[in-house]
Image 1 (cartoon, rainbow, N blue to C red):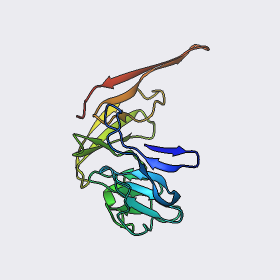
Image 2 (spheres, rainbow, N blue to C red; image 1 turned 180 degrees about the vertical axis):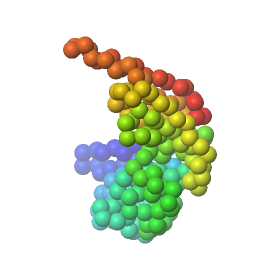
Image 3 (cartoon, one colour; image 1 turned 90 degrees about the vertical axis):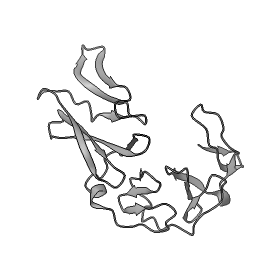
Image 4 (cartoon, rainbow, N blue to C red; image 1 turned 120 degrees about the vertical axis):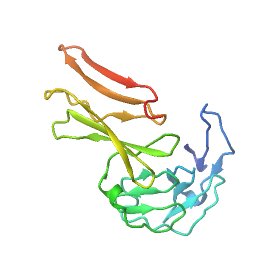
Length: 197
């Protein structure tokens, strides 16, 4: 979590699953701010002029990161650390972007949700242009597809969006009931607890 204090700069505080502080509060040096945190807990610090990797103790771990212009657009965390961006992949502790593998480029701007205790990605999306066929593809960390779970609704289904996947593998999707009586909108959800755990 990133916090600010009046005239005190920016600092970083980590919390455990029960929202209790799990370590000391650390000042982000030189007036920098937090840009993102990867799966390892390493921070991308947006310093006054450059980006840097920073550890949980507040120490910089790299020279300046060349993250493109504007830097690290459309970031998605990767299993094992680092980020996929629209400009390339920033591997853990790297200072420059690498070319994106085809499996990431072909799933550009789709969510990569960690499931199976961070051993796989769930990638929810639509199968058809009508938005009535939806899928959740499962991928290994190297991008190997393990298959997809598909759902299909009637051709006149309401636009409920792609399925949503939570961190512990729970799947949520809007079901076909989506009515509005002039005052109240009724939306029904399907919930599949820990479906992809």
